[in-house]
Image: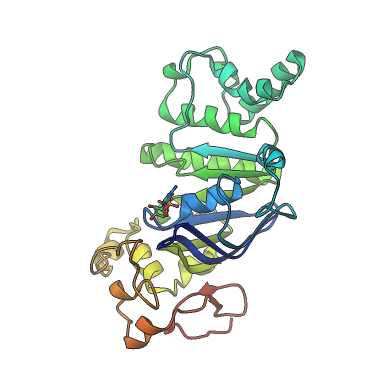
Length: 311
Ligand code: ADP
């Protein structure tokens, strides 16, 4: 469905937003993408949406290499991708129905089909009874569900959710996440869920990819990553995820990483994580670690000091 082959994106000569990223997403799979602000998450999204083109490597979506895709074919690719943003970008001078109908109107869909399709989408997100309301009258979680209905309306094959629950109360986050997960399963969608907070995906994704300064630090099946995080950066992120059991929570090692995030304009030589890494040696300043499947079963880690461990 989606494949990144050694993808590098440079915005200017000395600013590399993504470096040699390899990543694959099968049809019907749900991938979670995490990392600090500036790690390259949005850049990855923009490459899939053909809002940016790679500087090197190949981005392949639905069998199409996007690097050289003619501009006139870009809308065709985007037509199959629904996007849910943190800020759902609803229009408050239009009804819920009209907000969901907008992409259909842009496509010139006949009016009789619009009514049927909008109601079906609102039904999927549990908001059929609110079609005539103004989004302003809805709660934050309901507004986000309107955004999800709109992302589904063109029956995309892929949904990209960019920090979809970051602006919501914790109690509402779980509802929206469960809704997305159920839709993804029931409709057989591929879904990329982007968030800086690992705790929100603990129960949903198939695969988790952790980015640090534009580099993939680790990419593994979710259960495997949570049970056995291997990269020191992932381990630090995990330590920051609260554990519901107060006794185990208190016994956790401190989550704070040493030092500041280096400037992306002037990243460390060798391994980009080495300035904050408890395992780093001189060797790490000289050699870039290769992303390697450390288990032979799809647990990829970029670290010189993580041993292979056959599963
Ligand atoms: P994230 O989504 O993980 O916060 P981004 O992909 O937005 O990260 O950014 C990755 C890096 O690329 C950052 O250092 C950011 O400043 C830089 N960047 C993003 N967009 C542009 C742009 N249009 N021009 C120059 N630099 C950019």
